[in-house]
Length: 285
Ligand SMILES: Cc1cc2nc3c(=O)[nH]c(=O)nc-3n(C[C@H](O)[C@H](O)[C@H](O)COP(=O)(O)OP(=O)(O)OC[C@H]3O[C@@H](n4cnc5c(N)ncnc54)[C@H](O)[C@@H]3O)c2cc1C
Image (cartoon, rainbow, N blue to C red; front, side, top):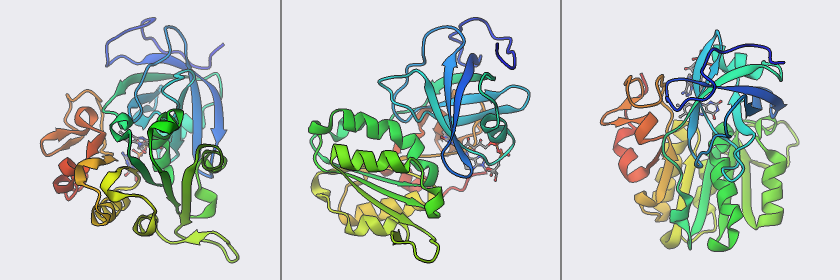
């Protein structure tokens, strides 16, 4: 039996009507970040592309955009990795298995990692930014032979904030991924690298003339990572970023996520740096 009840039709294709899902498992990843596994109450699993997000509805509390962090090749259970920052995210991460939530989507653009085939691939990410990138990384690793070098440059605030630590090491060991990690702050005696993730970009071993980069993290980090990648020689149209703006409808109607001529919910969240660079100066309202 489920813990709460939504009055949505059995299965709908209306993008404004949430589908009913049940939380089957909640995994604590770090102090404030949790991964929720969801199964549909009825209907087929949600097909999605790497980089897309859903609007997750905690009934009686509210709805928030959250990227899908699971593997697009196996869409069930549906995975979301969520940092507890406010009312809705708290309600979601504190919900017990068996609780029903609403899911709208999937929405937005994809990382389209196939465009990087034949090239070196550089993933640059910070903190929970690894969650929206995870489906793209899994996509690349499922066809590892189609790519050149694969680098994962990851930064977190402290060693305790490192997300998917074991999995990142498994990718490095089993899939020939060049993993480099750094933390902003470390306790006395910490043996790993300390510094910002953008410093890793400067020395990373890839061929800029034949590389493609995918970047996700706090906006300030993405801006400086993109600047470093460009100064290493990667063209702007071969750098993709995932933007976050507050959003409500997810389908380009309400205008909450407007960034000049773009609606991030439909034109993004994943966009090329050639398009985004002039817009990244616009602060979120
Ligand atoms: C396309 C997209 C994908 C996202 N993917 C994820 C994800 O995979 N995992 C995840 O944990 N979060 C993700 N977010 C951010 C998430 O939507 C917000 O953290 C959430 O809306 C906060 O809602 P709340 O009610 O819990 O907190 P609120 O009470 O609304 O806000 C609490 C604090 O969080 C800040 N905040 C609110 N919205 C955002 C935002 N969009 N970005 C950064 N800070 C915000 C507020 O300024 C405030 O300081 C994504 C956002 C977008 C637009």
